[in-house]
Length: 86
Image (cartoon, rainbow, N blue to C red; front, side):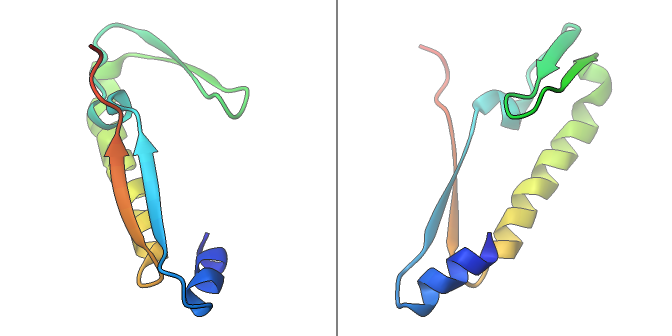
């Protein structure tokens, strides 16, 4: 990610990265046994959400912070989440 951002920045562009996550990815509100499916790879995981919630939330926080750190000082990262269902 950084080399492309640095290239844009070196040409005088201001760089902003919009990081969009679904609200459920941030809050992990699941309670019952759930089958999670990766949409980019053919991976599936049947899990008990209460048992993995704290580890998941730490992992997603670390991922978000890792993106921020890898982009600085080249770009600003703005995190957005999807709105709650109507």
